[in-house]
Amino acid sequence: MIVREAKRGFRVAVIGAGTAGVATTRVLSEQGFDCVVFEKHSKSGGLWADNYYGASVQMPKSLYRFPDEVHAAEANEFLGKDEVCDYLERIIDKHEIRKCFRFNTLVTEMKQLEGGIWRLTVKDLKTDVSNDETFDYLVMCNGTFSSKPHRPNFPGQEKFQGKIMHSSEWRSPDEFAGKKIVIVGMGKSAVDVSMVASEVGESAVQLVRSMHWFTTSHVGFIPTDMVTFTRLFQMMLPPFYSSSSMYKNLHKLAAPVRWLYFRTIEALMLTNYRLPRNLWPKSRFEFDVLHPALFNGPAEYLADVRSGRINLKVTAVNEIKEKTVVLSTGEEVEADLIVLATGWDKTIGLFNDEVLNRLEVEEDGIWLYKNILPPGIDRMAFIGSNAFTAINPMTHMVQAKWLAALLTNAMPRPSHKEMVLDIWDMRQSRRAITPMNAMRASCIQLHMQSYHDDLLKDMNVNIRKRSGLMGWIEHYFYRITPAGENEVVKRCPPTA
Image (cartoon, rainbow, N blue to C red; front, top):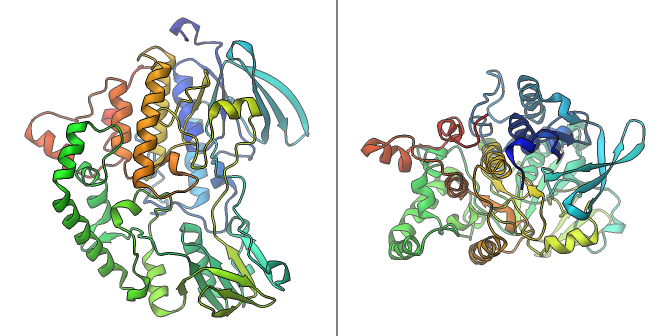
């Protein structure tokens, strides 16, 4: 374990310069750790540094930020990819940590040596020269779903005379001009692609296997974040895995109230959607909001679906022919271009077999203690890359504070047994409430504040902003924002 006097000279390798990497480097550097950040792109931003045309954040800018760092006043309400990168670049310079970052550098191999030291093989992408470096600690801040596009294979696709591309490859609306476009998928990228395809293409047909709930700006007449970004809303959700037995029993007793609460929200959401009955989601809203595909559906998208500019069909692809896509309903749709907005595959190939075995990777992800520590590997942590919430930058900052408290002995390190038992509870709970998907282990989403509260309590931080009746009302009923939680986050140890 690191002692405070030994921090300087203790080298920490940080993989990735997205929001998680910047938060981790800022927090650990403030505590005297020698951080080196490896980023393959030429600037900070991670996936945002090289994303598809028009990519933007799924949440308003008031929610996609660190607690103590505001966005530029002129920034769009839903930040574009370049605005995210600019935001991080400003923070790097403001906190004087640019010396920690090595851009255009790719980590090609990681190996843990005797004594827990990590040896990384890194390649300078400008010179194509590789070398080995050793570090005392390794922090993974790169997304495990960010470098390998998921490309489903369909029968007959080799006969298709048009082009099949993944949404991540899309760089210009000109690629869609005058084309008959079929979009496969229901996530954020599928919505972005469909909207542009409907504007510049000859036709836009979006295919989804099943409809899921997505948020809009309002629930009825109430702003959505005033409803969903409160602790009261999270109390209505299936209990977070770490909730007490008493809380879980009371939660069961309140089932009729919760059922009415969510059916009311669904009715209000459908009023906002104004979609035909065959496009209504069949899943329950309280479970969909815990799904990794949660996103904010633009009003323009819904208008395009209602008008028919986007021909949304709930069906699967059965076969691809020379010029058409055959649906499971038997219908054939003409296509010049097929866009696969189908997400990403897990990519954890940087680790050798020995490390992978100790990580115990499962079909639904990597199960970590508090979504941060692998119990089978010392001197290693995951910040951001294995925890997805609705306000990721805020989550990354709290995680970084938690790691700093651990590494400086400001809080006790959990035993191996404690970590294993906690992971077992998390796994059982999440598998019971979240459908099978490759991201289930890391998907926290709107359980975010329960998760943040757990980490803050580990650091012995008082999560109430003030005492008394008004403090109680504020705690449960007020909208949760990163800026609003800054007062609490500043209480995290260790103080710089």
